[in-house]
Length: 79
Image (tube, rainbow, N blue to C red; front, top):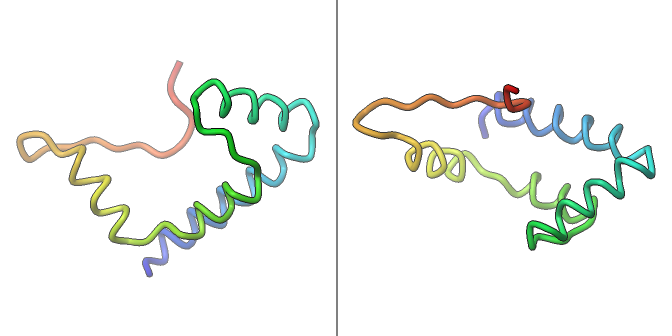
C-alpha cells in the first residue's frame, strides 16, 4: 500500500475518534448519514476506511480527470 494512503487513513481515524467523543458531534454525524441515506455507525465507518485500497484511490481519481487535467483536494470544503 502507499505510505500516503496509510497516513491519510491514520489521520482520518484519529480525527473521527476525537469527533465521536462528543455526543453532540456523534448525533450530528448520524443525523447527516440518515438524511443522506447512508446510515451507519462509527465502527462501520472505520471498517470502510480500513478497506480502501490504492486501486480504489486510482479509480476515484481517474473518474475526476477531464481532458487530461484534474484537481483534487483532501480536507475541509472551502467556504
